[in-house]
Image (cartoon, rainbow, N blue to C red; front, side):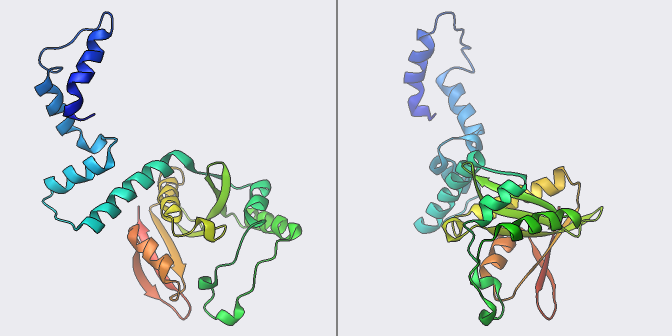
Length: 232
């Protein structure tokens, strides 16, 4: 609702039998004050971001502002359709039957091979991680398995995080970034962890950007990986 809608909303109120209005809070001035106080909860992303920028006295070019608006809209959409649930063998098969290897995950490109789905190997994969005490979560988008979140080397305070997406159809859309946010909330709320650790190949610049955007800080680099952590 915007204040310009007040007259129509007032007419709606008056058409409702038995409704009682407060002359102060329900007046046009009162509703305008309420809308101004609750700008962060508006369902109009463009209006919300515009007011937030005004309050913080931030000037953005049109392209940057549009990008922020689209991020708000996208996250509202993903909040409704993305969820993490415990991985099962059935879900693992639905993930890997259409899985495609990402060449950016191979430091030596000559080691890259196209992934070939084999039922027995997926069964072994699911069983082996249970035996190791890892926690696997399926990333579900609109009732389809599109990826996996993995927690390994779990201690009382920390765990290593990993994420894979099924194929290029689900990459570069913000789904990975949003799934990381959900995974961090899971780690803090349900696993009661205080820190998340992860390792990334230096050549995998896209993943490094995604994790840095979500608050991960580089701690060190060894002969193979760049290591990051985030305090929860």
